[in-house]
Amino acid sequence: MKYTKIWNVLIYSLVLVNLALLLALAMFNNFFVFLANTEWGNIQKKLSNLILEKGALYSKYSVSLNSNGSWVVDNIWCPENVSMSGETILSVLNTTPVVYSGSIYCSAIHSGIPYYIYFNPDFTGFSGALYLWDNVNLDSWGLALRSFVDADDTLLDISAWLPTSPDGIDDNFNTDNYSISASGSLMFPWNYIDDDAAARTTVYGYIPPDSIYTNILWSNTRVQEYIEENPNNNDDYYVTLWSVNSGYLYLDIDKDFDMKIIQFDKNTYNTSTELIPVVVEETTWISASIGYIQNNSWTLSLSGGLTWNEYLFDFMTNDYAIFLNNTGTWVLTYVLSWENSSWSGVYINAIDDSWAGSIKYLWAEMIQDDEKNYIWKIMEVTNKK
Image (cartoon, rainbow, N blue to C red; front, side, top):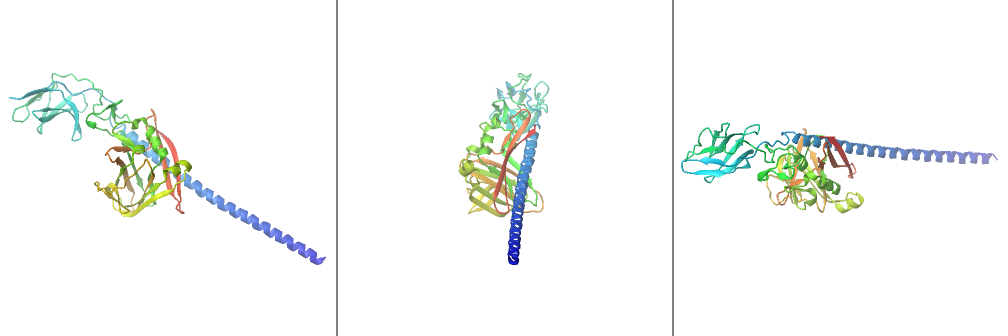
């Protein structure tokens, strides 16, 4: 009887020990689940903060580009029946707007040589003209105050055309309409493009010195569709990311850096949202420079001119992620832009600025964790214009 009691106590003790072990194991597992969930939550919070930060940055940039002019001001057009009269040669011509040496003029050709009439600062009239590198001023009636210094003693007179009238084109060629158009569907002459769309054709940012491989672009179908659906991206001068099957990346970067370019399987991500790297190119310690990204014998670099060793991006077939690592001790800044093989610029930044009072932005952010897994988040943010 005594042995039976001892045996019962022993069995009871073993049961208690097993229960304690099971409880400890459950708590241990719950602890690691808690840590995993906490780490995942922290990563998602980091991704969200990065997207919000970039959304605010690009929205502010877009607004600044579309408030640096005077919106659409159309008081004037280029004069007609402009007289250039010399001792032996006379021409009476209509002038047309041109962009010359970064400025806007009205121009025609006299005796085989172009002349340029320039506007006053308010774009309400004309103040002078340039011919054969000689500048002359105009009076309030449009008559040159003196003849040009040329062999024929040529005198310019635009008085037959005054007063001025509108022509449907913004006078200072800066419409602030979030589009590259002069007004509506009317484009600027001479294929001129103002800066209103630059926030959508470039990606710029900064990378602190303590960051490790920051994602500066991730192209995927959702981003491509977002860019495609912005009506402000519908023009004949730029192309959208969706249509590029052979494009060059142009990078302006002010500090030495490491670069990693990852090509992902587009079909797999579209069907299962799983990121499958197909090709990974990585090069360390590239000097600060401005140029096209090169891929010469699996080594990335930059070149100021085309060398035919460029990294060719096929966005129609593949998804790409581009990472930069700041190797210095100061903040690195970068500007990223693209062109296709036909030399057209590319809309690459997923900004929708077609709304009346707001700018929407879709960013696809990605980081790599300690176990080399790619963790991503795609989120739309909205800011006021």
